[in-house]
Length: 309
Image 1: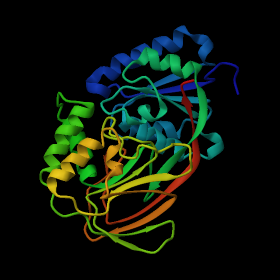
Image 2: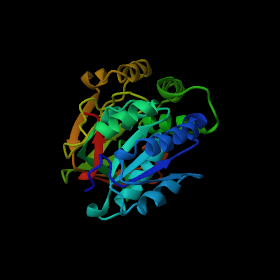
Image 3: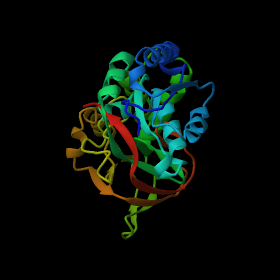
C-alpha cells in the first residue's frame, strides 16, 4: 500500500448529480486532487455520461488503492455493483463525496453531505473499515432494498427527480409518501422464509431490508442497523393499520419511533426467500427491480469503505 493517505486513486463523478451541481463538484475534486498531491500517488478522473456507466468504470478499477465516487445514492449503487464484480482482493477501498438529494449512504457513513470540500477533508483523514453489502437476485445494494408502499414512494421520487422537481431529500420523500399512502388499500401477499426457517404468510404494506438505518433522505426505517454487523435489518408491518395510523407511522419513521408500534416487526437476518402472489413495487438503492420471487442475502465485510475519524 502506498504511503499517501489514498494511494493511487480513481475518482468517478456524476456531473448531473444534484440537479447539475455534480459538474462543479467534479471540477473542485479535480483541483483538490491536483493541488494536494501528497494525498494520492497519482489519480484519474472519469465522468459518467449515462445511467449504468459508473458500474462498468468501477468494474475496471483494478490497480487503484482508492475509488472515490462523487454523486448521490444512485451512482454509489452503480459503483458498488461494479466493485462487487471484482475479486475481493482486487477491490479498491471506497470513499464517498456525497452530492445528491437523499444521501442516505452518506448518512450511514457519517459523511458531510453536499459539501465537497468538507467531505474531502474527512476522506483524507478518515479510516477504512469493512462494511457489508446486500444482494437480491444477483443485484447488489449498499443501503436499502424494499417492497410495497415504501418502494412505490422511492420509485416515485426517482421519477420526479428525473422530471426536474424542485423538491429534494426529505421534502420530496414526504410529498411522494402522502400521495402513495393516501391510495393504500391491501398489502402485498407473499410467502417469506427467513434464514431457512418455516414459511410465513405475510401481506405487508411496507417490507424493508437495510444495510444502514435510513432511506428517503433520512427516514430511519431500521434505526439500529449497523453496516458492519454481518446482518440485514428488516422492518415490516404484520397487521394492516387503518389509513390514519399508516400515515402516523410514516411520520414516526422520520425519527425511527415507528418500530415501537405493535403493527411493526423488526428482524435481523442473513438470508430471505420471498414469493409474492403478484409482482410488488420493489426498489434497490432507489432503482426499480421487477419480479415475484426474490432471493436476498448479505455479503459480510464485502468492501472497505472510508469513514470519518
